[in-house]
Image 1 (tube, rainbow, N blue to C red):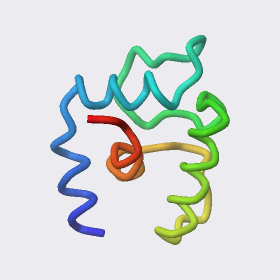
Image 2: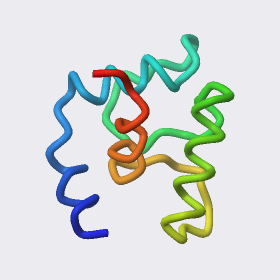
Image 3: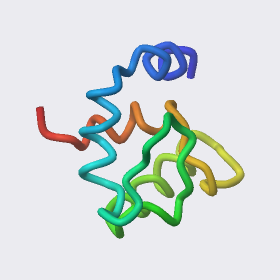
Image 4: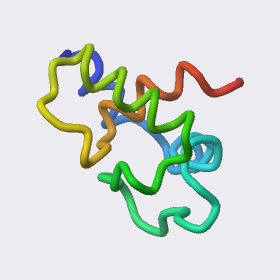
Length: 78
């Protein structure tokens, strides 16, 4: 978990933008840093966020922070 927290803190704005372009609906592209609302994500993004949240033992996936974005980046090409 500490590795995810460390990596999340190191995500650049371009990495976050790439992740959000793939997994957040076009109408809800964020203009600010995370956390992001779960409802903003597209269907694939929601499934992945729910899966990652469950694996990490989070009680909710209502908000998506850098920790989950690091895990989502594994599903982003490049």
